[in-house]
Image 1 (cartoon, rainbow, N blue to C red):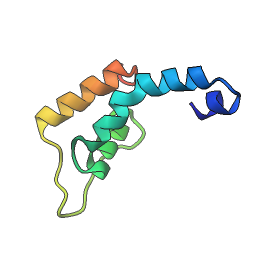
Image 2 (image 1 turned 90 degrees about the horizontal axis):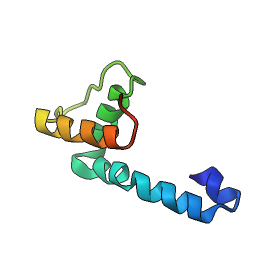
Image 3 (image 1 turned 120 degrees about the vertical axis):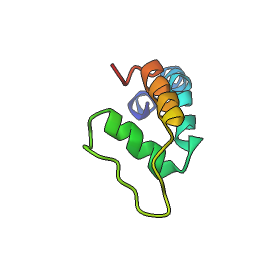
Length: 77
């Protein structure tokens, strides 16, 4: 998106931003470190998404919701 914008393709950057808006919003479904680490783990970037107290793992329902977001964004196969 930044490359598109920097190269002057404002419409392309705006389109990509719109396509990724659900992904951006999903970070706020729970405490951001928890949702972010879950999605990064699902992408295979990290092996585990451990949290320090008082943070707790996501519920199975929220994990499923985030998986749907990743799938719709084309980031989960």
